[in-house]
Amino acid sequence: MQTPWGLSQHCEVLSNGIEFHSTASHGGYRLSEEHKKVMRAKKLPVKTWYEEDCECLYVIKAFPELFSRYFDRFETFDQGMIELNRQINHWFK
Image 1 (cartoon, rainbow, N blue to C red):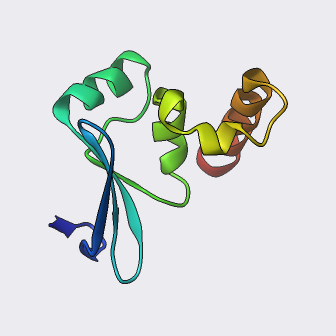
Image 2: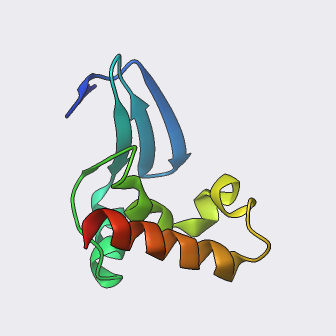
């Protein structure tokens, strides 16, 4: 599959409609139309592809149940969300 970063070399399906694609140089998340509706409802940027370094924070915020590895490093889920929002503000505000 073609991605914004080149040809996908690996695809990990996180959920029906959310995939992580890696390429030779970069990668990111691909969302289905249904998942884009969730992004819109949560007032997050709506697009098909979210790159893996910074834009992925929006995907994690919208679908935290799929990213336990991110949240496991915090004592509580709320602490994880505070840090996630801090990172979003750092990169996008």
